[in-house]
Length: 291
Image (cartoon, rainbow, N blue to C red; front, side, top):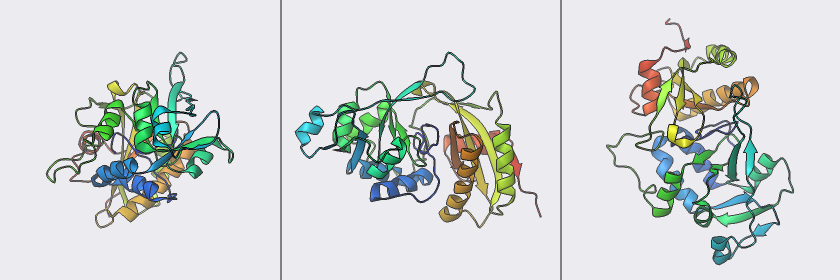
């Protein structure tokens, strides 16, 4: 999960739907969404790539590194995102600073093939925005994306997030040391779980499904729902999980498209903090009957 990859409404995410990659960076992002071991490589790929931003003034293909670093000619556009349904009426809209892994994704998110934009080296972009107070979000509202926390941006710039983890180290889905509060949501998403039950029942690869609400106090984000999916023995390969995941995200988009929902694979040997909680501390909302 990496601090959370992937989303639909505007989550921190680990979200994921179909093969939409149009370049090597997006292929790496899609793989990182379900393979924790690939996440350091995704960070390296990101730092070696160009990204696209919505430019409020004019289209810019920034070739000059000095222009990129100084922000010359750039007026980065912030977006407002409505709070999740069920939030207090006093909850203000969330302000984010979006950036995109391809021009195609930028245009799709803007719903405008003529959207004004700028192309920057990712490292230069992060140098520009490292002091921003807004959430920095890659591919907001699209199937694969990620919000970057300030400590992650600092780690990308100083290189500490770019090294492969030691072989014996456990894989965290959220930055190491991050405080998590996990439990069940006050308002249980019945419509979503009922729809997922039907979908999982028709997919013989799914053994069980779990649900929890996860809150990261230091993120400034509201709590969001995690759905954990456990596959049957012998069907735990990445291709099968991707297929199950596509179906689950389709259901989520049809049932509650404005909600923030993260999907993760629940494996017996996973040491991921959230996965351990789902697996060991919750009762599955769906379980395939034993033959």
